[in-house]
Image (cartoon, rainbow, N blue to C red):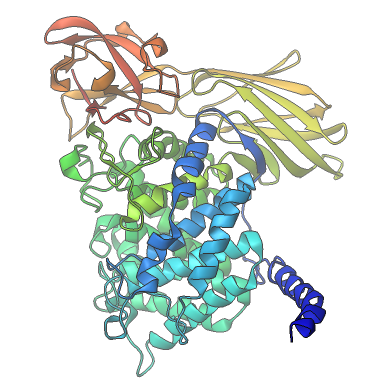
Length: 610
């Protein structure tokens, strides 16, 4: 018998290799969108500076530390230890897939490959991929977790082409379609979860994606059912309330994370179908949030809901800036940027990424805060598989390469100013196709000087665009003897004949901005330098017993470089001092970017008494 096995072993091995190779053949979406993206991210091989540093922290200290046994425990032994434990493995697959697409790191590939294999094995014969007992199915967060199941598996499939991942997602979606609908005998989706149907209704996003990947009409039909369900009695009435009020607090129970998750699906449905009213309504929602409900650090929510206009309390007791809200707000802006190409959405991406997103992950440990207050202590935690935000923040950081720059209306456009290297296929003025390699050399956000090295595959005439930030002053680009001047909030276009090793030298001022505290902090101010909000960290300010006794006097004091005062293990060396009053006496006060403050568990303050 052993001899027979040995004779057949080469055949068995070659058969396994053939199956494996076939499984990993890549398949893209079958169904094109009717609305083409106006912004298409470029392929960035390398990102440096603050963003590159924090992306590496996210990989090394968070993602690579994930324990698959913990994330899969609720599937191995149902029911799970918490009602939403099923979402964490799916969120990890999103983060890992995006990170692998940028880094090609074999370690993260091995970790997610192993997790997918074990995860697929947890699917039940009817397609169920949740963590509930049969008697408790489709309550609380079960549909929500299936939403993330499909999202995670599709993201994994998109970077590997591994067909069983797609097939597992289809089986889960088929079960959802058999279970819910407005046909006789089916259940009401809006009553199968939390927040007036906002949570289960957010499954719209992966259903649109799955239709595009498979062409199966059932998934598109289910998307249309979801829109009907939104408006039925007891539903969140997303469309009708936006049409009537243009106010996000009027939608469902105003739960920010779940509502923004529904918005992502509606935008994808708009791109698929071209039904214009959906884009206009969500642009109305975006305006309402940015004008009335957005913190200066680029997040929203107080106790996880959208509050009344201008109510932006920022202490630990306010449970403000839920990490899931921050990440989903970033996804919302990224989709609007892709659809429209409008740089105002890149402005919001920059605000959120440089401030609240990075602030939610500790650069010393990779631990994450659920709520990241502007006043108080950042409550970092290191657990896995229990907190939705501890799984979400890595997702936001993994999206950074898609925000750096790419083609807007077929013109290569720089959006974020970090060290980096990118390649892109572009079309020259004579309609010839060329490959562009662009390298960015800068110390940003430490200063506003950037050198771009331009290397087209051949000499050619084409246009390059550069986003001019709203906070910048005196934005100037110089190519040889030619100078170009930018206008805040717009794109600066440079059209010329480019040769190998051409340089563009860009410079802009980063003036200190003093921001009034508004309704919630009427006697306080905050400071912004470039895209970064600054904070006082009590731990690096010896002699300050309480931050309540720090008082700002005049902008004439200005900022001075104070990075030499930072502790040796404070890796990102950026700090400033300003003359203020402490206990009514003049004193130099050290401030650091909010993203870096509190990493040693000290009290911090963004809003400072004046």
